[in-house]
Length: 96
Image (cartoon, rainbow, N blue to C red):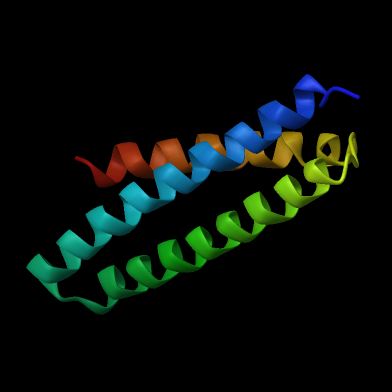
């Protein structure tokens, strides 16, 4: 049985979220080295925890798809889409 497109798109969005979060971690670390404030340290910590969450998501959904358990990711499609928009906005603000 072929993997439904919606499941592949959701997995792809999680992968994009991992990349966006990695970029944020590096930007925040660079800012922390320059400023050394508690706020930037908090941003680094938050982004790192967000990265862990996305890595766990990716592993979890990839495992489900490997076991041919399809359709489950449709529940999280919207959440991952909103998360990706939020990460893009954070990345835009952080890169300025």
